[in-house]
Image (cartoon, rainbow, N blue to C red; front, side, top):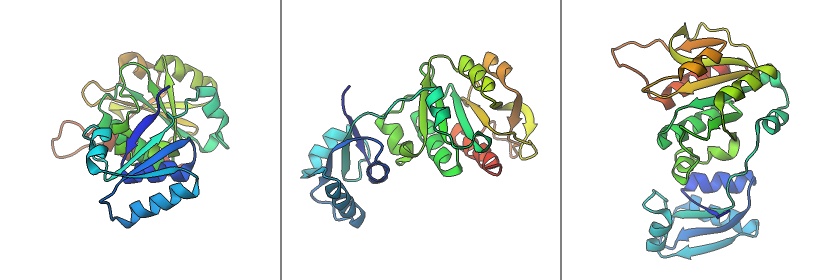
Length: 242
């Protein structure tokens, strides 16, 4: 499998600090004077990683137009785990919150959701292989390195996964219109919150599998919240249970 070319200061910093995957090279613009970037170079060298100071034009080509902030990091691909492995990593299921994404195809939304998950205690995100954005370099840049702080599980069928999680004791909550209003919902852990797309919301079959539908009360006439913002709000409410 080909190495990943990722970019951005936060992304590189989190990868180096987390140590979850092998890093082959850190490339830095030779014009970059930012102290954080210089500190990154020192951190990489302390781990025996090659550090190259490059012509900025080379970084532009490597980042393919992405906002690299003078930093490119070459790593092995993100490790893949399955549902059983992710459950096995939990120290206490009674203090566990996971999220599943149903039709989130915008990479910016996916990156924002991963970032919020890492900040608010959601330990695993489940992505269907179809009808979903993948964890691309752009997503990892948008997440500001938070991909290193959560487990990402890709599944063939989200609904079958929900059934499996119910068997493991998870309560399934769907975030959609017409449900019980936050913050009055009494969440039970372990919880699996399913977030649908802005346009369609949850797919009908996925909605049927949920134990409870929860909604965010809205005022001011805007039709719906951005999926990333909606996820952050429900993650915050769930974090009160952790």
